[in-house]
Amino acid sequence: MTTEASAPPPGAAGTDGRLTQLTRLGEWAGRLELSDIPKRVVDFASSHLLSQLAAIRTGLRQGDGRRLVGALGPPFQADTAQSARVLAAAGAWLNLDDTAYAGHLGPSTVGVPVAFAYARRLSGAELLRAVVLADECAARVTAAATLGPFRGQTALHTHIVGAVAGRLACERAPAEQWHNALSLALSAPPWTLLRGFVTSDARLLHVPVAVRMGLDACDAAAGGLRGAPDIIEHPDGFLGQFATVPLPDAVTLGLGERWHTETLSFKLHPGGPGIDAAIDCAIELHRDLGAELGAWDAADVADVAVECSVYTLFAARKAEPYLAGPRSPVGALVLTTPYPVATALLTGRLTIEDFTQPQVSSAERWQLADKVRLVHDTTMTRALLAGDAPFGEALRQAGAQGVAWLKEFGGAQLADLAPETTPPAKDFTTASKPTPARVRVTLRDGRVLTRELSVPHGGIGPELRASHAGLMAEKFRAAGGAAAVVEAWPRLATLAPPDLRALLEQALAP
View 1: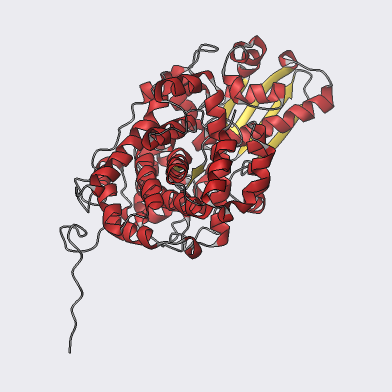
View 2: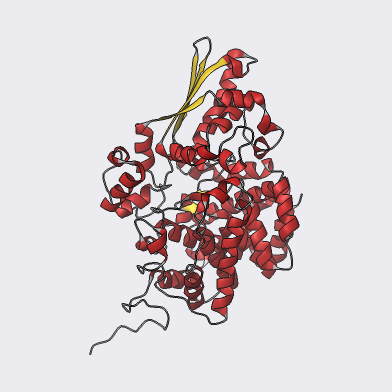
């Protein structure tokens, strides 16, 4: 007797009759339980939640954050979708959102689950499940398009997927609704224009627009609308427009084994992730300079060399046309290196307030910033490309096409720095994000002080895997969060719905 494989359900297959990437992803997501997820991954999700709540707190207390609330309403309101958009926007625009392989995930993958878990009176366990699912789905689709025109905060498709997954996980939606909502949402993703993103308040609306698209697609799918099931991989689909080297298999590769959630790096300072290591070095050098000189100022410094990888240089090149000293838009300042490094050297820290008046008009900061120069270090670029995030794993999956992409992205010299092609990682238990920097301060009297860091504090690697819970507790408290929230956080997975609602309210209370 012979048996025939059952046909895929209606709307689940592509033109070749096989299950598509989004169908497989939706079926996996619809079945996943918190008990299926390794504890180490759940712990990362817990830290991600607390970290993103700290970012939201910081965003809400700024002038632009208050204007956002004036326009869209408070973070918790009767309109759950609007609540999700406010939470997502507040946690994104200051570059305090955490990154993974691949994408700046938290604005949608935390903001949307928090809004819907609060509104639907879910438990702490249900919230954690939703965050893991949102992280996994958003990171996988973003990884598939990493070798393309958009990365970082300009990749708004990340938040389309994060919004769909975060909401549907909270609603316990069936698989068919998952793949229909995802395919509908990915049929018309936003295309970010750098001019508006860097120079205007439009950056406050970019993430809410993507979240709105995702949530509207959920409503449409619940009402019976269907999307193109092969929208990811079809030549006329998402990757056909949003990837130079499409990696469709990244969407479902190693489901249940490759947990993208454990590739998260946590933001400790404002600014693009390419400058994190340099800021950490500058903070340490502030202490060194104090020990060496006692009182000092910018006039004591002759030169500040920041040796770095092409990752840092690329962000600086994008920001450079928009820089105008103290009149620079915040969207450019958070991407560049000189002003943040100068500020950290002079003050021993870097906070959101350093990008606002009156701090941003400090003559001494700009005097020192004028002495900061970037120097490409090829060894650091080799280390960057050999890591997992931000795009080392994508290069491995792309193989020879990845090397060709590097050549197009940065020239033959950059392609020559790529490591030998190896198979994609089976899991991310040893993931790393090396974005190295060496900061060398030369004083006017000839003395030289140097600090170097391969993986920034908060960057994924062995140190973070051992300490992320404590580190995120410190970040939350530094953002003005209540000590009682930090004390209760280790019990998040056991919280009943009323207790979770009270904790979330307390976490965002002024």
